[in-house]
Length: 161
Image (cartoon, rainbow, N blue to C red):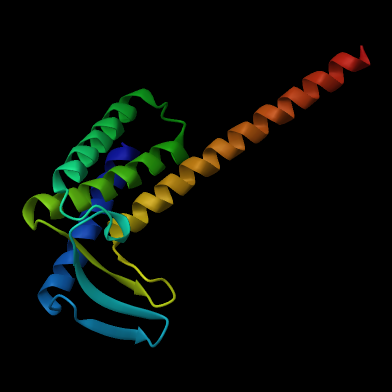
């Protein structure tokens, strides 16, 4: 259930934010929230992250469908006790759905988060994908660390015998 809640929640928040941007800004318009640090800038991105591969919408549509399919598959395979893992894949799936919606119904992805210290504009869906992947990496790190700790304990106990 957590995967579905995260995925649908991320998609809803993403849609609401993008609708607000589209109703209140014109493409290219920017609002200085914190001058020289953070602006809200409406950009229609025809590519992937950082505008890469512009015009190859079909690649991103197929990729998003594979990701969402993988998340749905994972929903049924990942044990319920794996809360962090389930949350992470839900966030990734919701972010993929958000950008997939834009590509299918707008033809480009609506971006608006503009940190002036970073040359790229992104959106909530992008953020959730990055945070979800970060949580997956953290989970893998913890599992690897736990595995090494168990190995050390086993090695220490076997050398004492």
